Image 1 (spheres, helix red, strand yellow):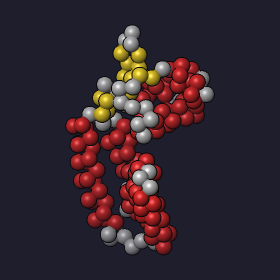
Image 2 (cartoon, rainbow, N blue to C red; image 1 turned 90 degrees about the vertical axis):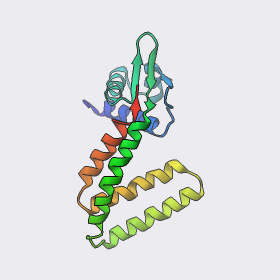
Image 3 (cartoon, rainbow, N blue to C red; image 1 turned 120 degrees about the horizontal axis):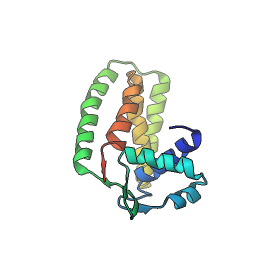
Image 4 (tube, rainbow, N blue to C red; image 1 turned 120 degrees about the vertical axis):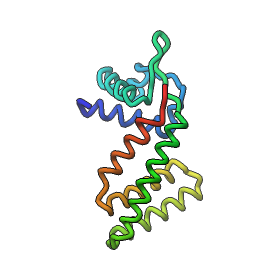
Length: 161
């Protein structure tokens, strides 16, 4: 992405899509997005273009821009990839002694997950679930793989137009 405002618009819109604040099939207006985000036309257009390239939104000519539907087959394939890779990550993690900091981080993450689960705050629960998994990728030196998987298995494959 070309500039910070474009990246900011993209990040905000992506989060709204991931958390279903913007629901699959929902029509969105470029002007409304500009007003809601307080960001100008060009960065919003560039962010929307990027989301379109990732199949997170789609455009129907003379109708509008819509949030893409979730493709169940792609979700199943993304899950398969995550399970396969994470089995290897956990095998490698078992070979690495944890530092005190890593132990403390894991303990904190699990406590937060228990709290948010009991409060039925599933957005926060899943945020900490991601942090849990991410930490094991970092422990094994595969944090680049984590970033790649998060981007490729969610953003690029689970939505269809």
